[in-house]
Length: 88
Image (cartoon, rainbow, N blue to C red; front, side, top):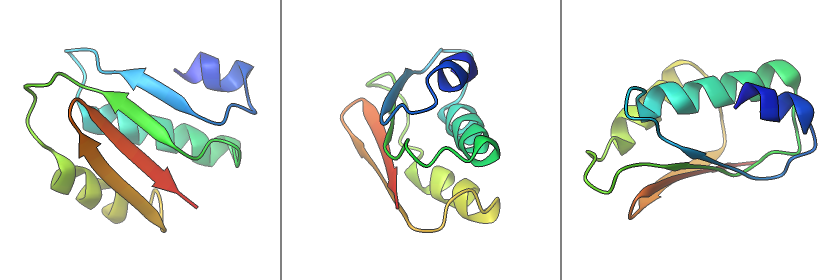
């Protein structure tokens, strides 16, 4: 993920596949951290594809984003097997 974000700094959308060993929280935290340190203003929506049967972690993700001040003005939601995160 970091290599792609480094190589394509003007990327506008990224969809990530959850690897079973990694949590959705870890994937989103890493992506937002990378966006912050590189000051990538082009990438706005982020999509993480998860297993359909995985637990809904929406509240946990919101708490993580807020407590670590990763984003201020954002929307996060889940549709079927994907988490979508959009911000201004």
